[in-house]
View 1 (tube, rainbow, N blue to C red):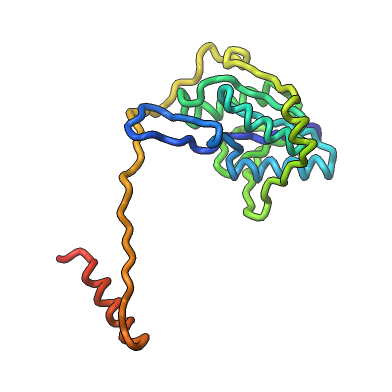
View 2: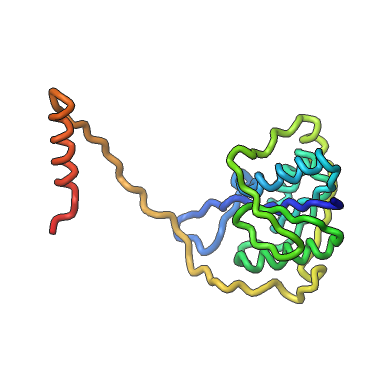
Length: 208
């Protein structure tokens, strides 16, 4: 196998109340758990059959954190599609990542998290709770900070302009915080407590 591609996507960004778009911060930028499973599988294939692993990410400066994390587990090459991800929906991201993979060429297998959406060549959705991404060695982490990666723009991938998003974000806000309260049921015996618990549940149910 000539090459294996791990598709890397950042975690969900934090959202501030009444904000009009996504707000990302460094502590929220990392390889998503599903894509981490795919990357671990790619590294395992590399160890077994000497495959070459490419990691692809889309974003701006903060997206480089995901590539550095991939390098720290011995990914061979990285490609960053440089674009503000908040201007795209999932379909637009998929189109740009697919174009970046085609630009690399010679790809035999594409691995992504189970929520990925990539077309040909062969694509496997990889998810297994036990297949956690390995812990990086200190030396590999240090080397990852100096390892170069390719940066491409949408124009380099044949797009005169970024794919139009099919969904318009009108606004984002966090849900109101719910008040939580715990109650303890009194009773001398388990049977008495069970009866009181059932009565209390009935009291809380909507009437009518």
